[in-house]
Structure formats: C-alpha cells, structure tokens
Length: 100
Image: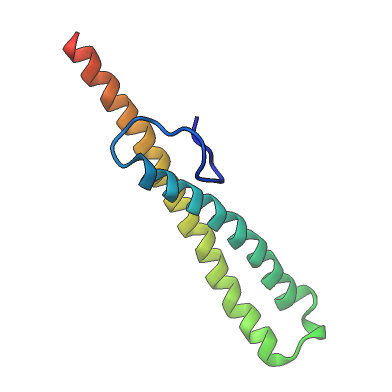
C-alpha cells in the first residue's frame, strides 16, 4: 500500500507510479498546510483583527483567499493521483483478464 504523506514504501506496479505518488503526497500536504494557514488568516482577519494593524489585516484578508485556493489545488492534485492509481489498476486487471 502506498503512503499518503511520505514517499517511502511500496507503490503500485504501474507506469509513472512515482510521479503520481509525488502528486498524491504533495496534494495531501498542500491541503493540510492550506487549511491551517486559512484558519490562521481568518483568525487574524476577523477574530483578532483589533490586535493587528490595517496593513496586516489587508494581508490576512488576501492570504485567506490564497490559502483557500491552496486547499482546492491540493484536493485536485490528490484526486488526480488517486484516480490514476485506481484507473490504471483497473486497466491492468482488464488486460490480464483479456489475455487469459
């Protein structure tokens, strides 16, 4: 079974498995970091806005959008990798069944 958070371990025996595994790991970490930084920027933008200067609040509002986009891109990367792993395994099993 391939790992979702590091590149070690066993990968499926398919073409470009390493690239898809890197995409999966990068997507998962992108979602985690994006979520953490989105929450921090929302806290700085709204909850604790009175503690920060106006320039920091503007930066926090802009970064909320950017970090939320990071979560979305991480999800897309993860979905592509998992789709390729599932689709290529199904394709390989169909080829084996056709040969028999």
